[in-house]
Length: 149
Image (cartoon, rainbow, N blue to C red; front, side, top):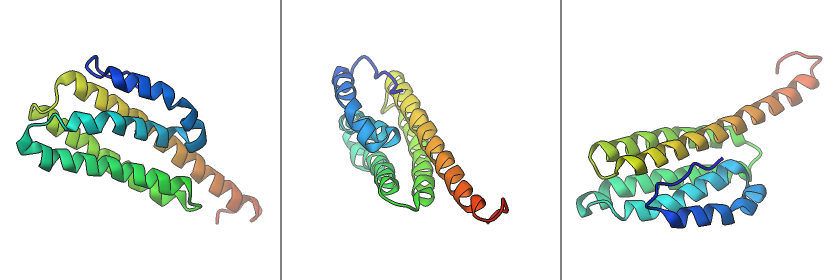
């Protein structure tokens, strides 16, 4: 479920509906992160000049790092490491967005939207990691008479 954007971002809503088909092809965590980036990049452009190239660039780099990790997990057999990296970057992004709010570079409604979106992406990544870990355990456990590998 994609959180609803703040009222100041009507363009995000139209994009998120159009991206529904892509979610089936790429996976819900990757698509949710992509949709979040579509909202985040223009939002960061509104930061004050003094922070646009410091905090804004850092937040964008962290969000892109999450996207990179999710793409790597999509196309790798060794997903767990990429998914853990995505979780770490999501945590950094959470704190960065909180800092932006506390410094008053984000209003509360935009911060609330970002926090909900990041939380949802985190749930999707966590579910993917849990499913992947269970699948690997079942594959290893099944061939060893139930003993852990």
